[in-house]
Picture 1: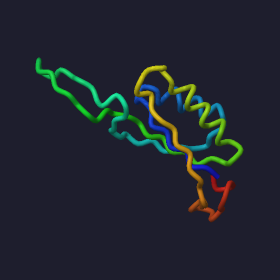
Picture 2 (picture 1 turned 90 degrees about the vertical axis):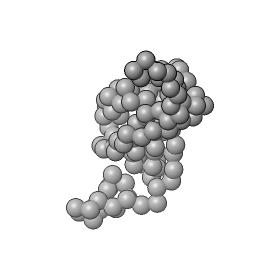
Picture 3 (picture 1 turned 180 degrees about the vertical axis):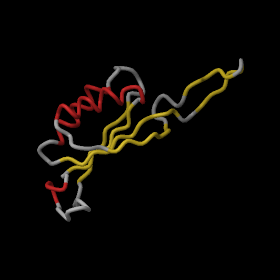
Length: 112
């Protein structure tokens, strides 16, 4: 099993969610986060004064997927979240040791 973490631009969330649903992803977790990468923040104007922010709003998506489905999940997120501009985000894939469905006690891929 794989644990996939994607950091994307907030306005791309609906597109990514719909694309993953069409792929057959049964569930995901979404968190609003802030961070920065190569773009090092941005300059904004508030009440006529310009100021620099070094933390940009992003959305973090977490998905547990079977080994067979994981590459397609990564490809789907990449295609749906891309604007071909700096700051599109990152996708991380980690090994997932185990998963247990609380209600039934099922484990492994069945729990996903």
